[in-house]
Length: 373
Image (cartoon, rainbow, N blue to C red):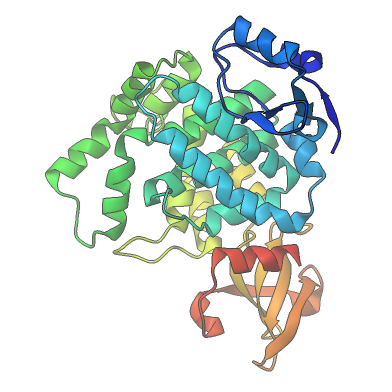
């Protein structure tokens, strides 16, 4: 490891804000861990006077740091990212939410940029862990989808980050209820329905209580269920806004891909087809379909040959993904996954299948490993 004096990078430290790197003593032992807050300028000066050091590798930005990692390390980082987002959302409506979300978001955005196919995997195949309840996982997936589509639409960098944060927080006021409804087999009770109807406004109020004053972010959360023809809620306004309009579409799409107690998840090709039929010609929906494809990474498919596999990457067109075959045309498991390009006629995808076609269930971790192989 190589080190530099803390004094050389002191400009990257903001008093009262979390440290962006570990601070070490002259003998390399840890003094202050990343995330610790330097109380005042006097404490910072005292650290520099004692010859504190910083590991140069920690000075890399998230994108640069991830660029140096092997792809095999990425699944673990995705799980960490979801956990950090879950922890950050627990702050609402306390102050410091914006800073917590910014800190949690940066590694995730870097992961999306590093490997968009693996990012789409997170939308289709999320492993939650104890810290990430159903509602958080749904918000995480919707935020990833919104970021990818906004990027395809060539929105600027600041707006992309705002889109991601708005996606994470649009259902802030009903995260627990989402988990209840996901397991509930009967219709919504009146109190549940009332919570759903008021969650956009309540979400904005929670963000404001947490000290967030970004008007575009707040409006996006408040209006993400409004529709340009005035048929949405909670107010029926026709003045929706671009970010809210995008959030409504990705929320609808990712909800189709999520299983609930009373129904299974829709097949990815069916979800995409429904989106296209419900919203034909809209550039946001067109961008969503182009970004995810008809067979997005993470879905199981059957090829015309009879082989079965999992989509591990997007191909040259929306209908021609890269597939890792696990079962051969004769119905026997292959000794090792076989990657095929489905743009070749003999490997054309004939349709989406469920886990049952393989005779076993796969964890998200297993599938991501197949994507990396």
